[in-house]
Length: 152
Image 1 (cartoon, rainbow, N blue to C red):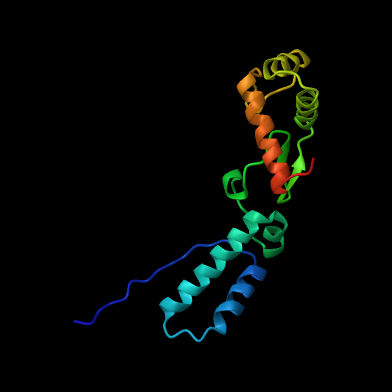
Image 2: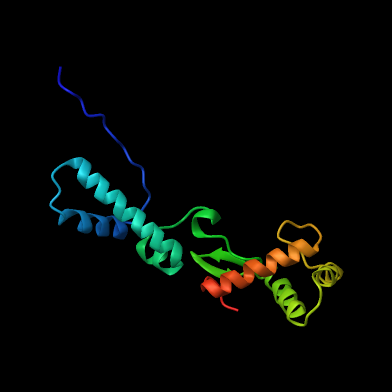
C-alpha cells in the first residue's frame, strides 16, 4: 500500500510584500522536496518575525502586523502601540513624566505613590499607586529606554 503524505495547510497572515520576499528567499534555494521548501519558508517567516520584534518599524515595512501586545513587546506605562509603532499615551504619559521627575528628585517609592494618588494619576489597571507599582513602572520604563524601544 503506498504511503500517503498528509496535506498540511498553514494559515499565516502576511502582506503581499512579505509573501514576495519569502518566495524570493525560497525559490533560489535549490530545494529537493516540498518539505524542504515549507521548512525554508517557515524559517524565513520566523526570522522576519524575530527581527520585527526587535525593530517595530521593520514589522511595518515587512507587512507583519502583530495582533497582540505580547507579540509586539510590552511597552512601559505611558506608551501604547499606534500604527505599529510605540507612541505616547495621551492619558497616561503625563503620569509617567511625574513619576520619573519625582523619582529623580529622590523621593521614596511610597512618597511617589502618595503623590501620584493625590494628583489622581491613573495606574495601568485603574487602582491606587503602591510603592511596588511605582518601582516596577519605573524599572520597565528605564529598561525600555535603555533597549531603545521608547525615547526618554
